[in-house]
Length: 346
Image (tube, rainbow, N blue to C red; front, side, top):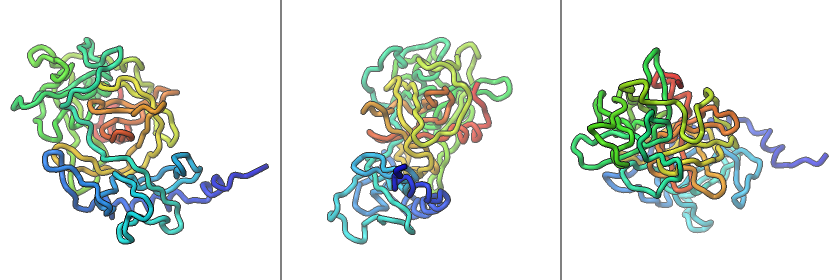
């Protein structure tokens, strides 16, 4: 029987060696000082790895944009410079201790904005009012100074004891650590025509603080529903989640979000550290899921933050979407989210 030498090479690579190399280079590159925040200035993509690299993970090496059958340490860069255009001191390693290395261009990772109007959604329209409110639809807070209106995505209904909560991102429900507990949450979000006088469905209960200078694991928050009858756990167009599972490389997943509605994608990494640009600064996250869309479509866009990501074949939740670029989506592992918030899927 003929053997594929690439697959033989894959089997000989020790995962723990890849993980150790990833941790070393993640600390070296992602914790380096760089420009901070949308409210300050965008990160300038320079050839220096400390500025150009936005993620370090483990994934399958691509050759001519095709899977090569070899697991590698992956450097995700804003710009992939051609050979010969980068000086020696700015070159990324071609191997790390004999381990394969791959460099993939992904653009700039941003938490998905919630304040800009976006392209029309496809039916069912997630930007309309739903009663009961369903995961996948528009949700959001009110700026205390009324300087902007916003909307993100209602990810899932979760519970603790007898109480039910709306699950989404910190930046969708708590404005990046800035809102007090008890702040009202509306469906639809005010950007999508929600009425602050009539459309409150929940109140902010807990937000996992986003921290600079250290790696975060999740961008997550919950808001206790004001009446249980106001929410359903059935995701628009998809149905209720059937428990949780662990994301795997090449897993086919799907989600329903406020902006792009239904999209399917493929998991390309389950252990990537990333630096993400927020309104209030740049935050680094460890061990994140990376997803690319199927059928040449992006998996998500601005306003999809907070969407629950499920394995398509089992309907089990695997991730909580929170950021990305025009080509790649980033998600927290759902079990990290639920553990941090001390809740379970309803």
